[in-house]
Length: 180
Image (cartoon, rainbow, N blue to C red; front, side, top):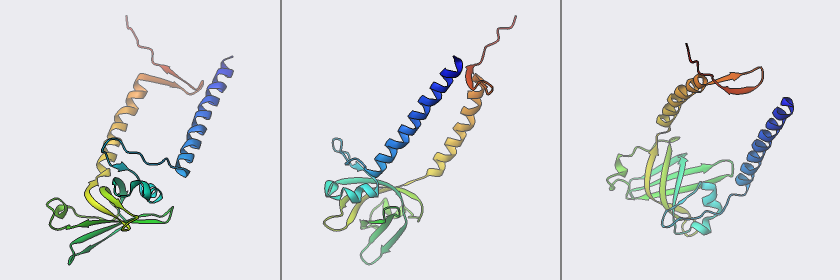
């Protein structure tokens, strides 16, 4: 009787995992059309920006992506940032006008390979660019350090409060001893 329950639980868990992978794969192949809430900008990746360029034309978009290359033209004071999606063979150019005159932009040091959150106005159909409005560097190493510190705290707490019985493949709550 106990063996049938264990097999049933493993089967249900497997169905949930396989279903999640299947629906995730479908979402990757057929992404939903970007939607907008109130006056917030569209938060999309560059594949969605390229595929649904007609939907987001003249709209504000936010892209979280690593920068592959950039070019600064001193004579026209324009910074062009190039973002690639090698899987879909797409390259998007984000252009910031008056880069050196802006109080915030001139203190940002653009580094290739670093991740940035870029807000801009999509002009892909009309001009072939995204006109940059704001840019912020995402410091993922701080997030990773905090995640590792949290993991180092949570894992011992889990093993402190729960006892894992590997022979019966069960997780039982640890019995509290009431010493007398």
